[in-house]
Length: 463
Image (cartoon, rainbow, N blue to C red):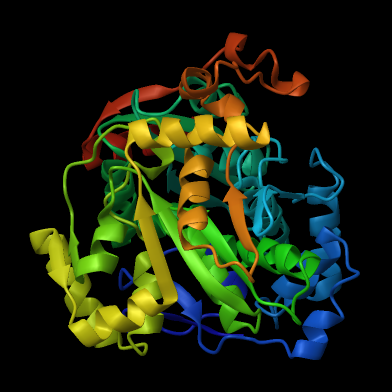
């Protein structure tokens, strides 16, 4: 299995190289040279596998030549046995054709755990084999950082630096990052938005000397291994509802586009997905693009769904690459224009192809709270703001004869204030995290300046 860059100017790499590299040297994102696929019979035969077994089988298609299914099964068994629910990713029926998949059963109560706990183990396995040391640098809008830190804490062969937007994540999200005090964990609160954090991380990777000196690697969803591991729960949900003999649809709360792109990959692998629907908040750059063909960056508006407070969805580049016939010249042109002008436009024919694959809906904060309230009144289920947006998008596009599966991406206790305002109920943290907000924190506030961040990383690594 080889991987190529969406921008076409980097050499093809194997899985281990892509895992350690993260972003391609030409600024693009890695995708498989050829997508693996399963036959209908092969998918049918997966129905009796538990989550860890299914994960190993699916991911082994992407790690060929580097890690085999048995090696992956050792990792997935170790990771998923610690999740809160025996099913790992339980499904619950809300209406005749509406289902919710509860992707908050991991250690940090967010869907990022399903991939990042695995990716942390993959790094550890590969680095032990090669006796290398790497520096992981990542940006987070709230959930990626904590899941990445928990997946990588204590690993002797890596240091991890996570940038989050200062005062723009929830208290629970911040504490889940900043109370992990392992020596290889470093938290940076950047004075700016998530997009500033993400842009700075990309600039670090594009600084060739710094990148090579510190062996930089990425753990957010620009790293292909994240996408690969997220493909699994699409198969798991679909199999539980009758696939491959029945079609299913998915509604996905969307910020950086990695989660829903994993669903797109699952479809390319043979899973019978009818619709992929995204839900956004007031930072609605993707729904606007799907309606107009114009991708236009506007100012980020803080919201009660902070993980969606994004105007640059990195993984959308992968999706554009696939839907625009893998034309790397076109991708280079669009990305160059977007960086220079904060805007680009595609043709009517191109947006038609793109919107055929993805539908979108956006809610403001008031509409989000109203949706949380309606869900609670009608089903007694308490949704966090992100998942509620996914619910509304799924409900809007649902078809009577095809199950719509809403991905619940975070536990409501991570966003207790808007949930209480909407339902009157204060969602408590699970018992094993009940002391989280009283734990000691360690983080460093830095201005949005690449030189300051470089100095901090080099100072910390010299200790």
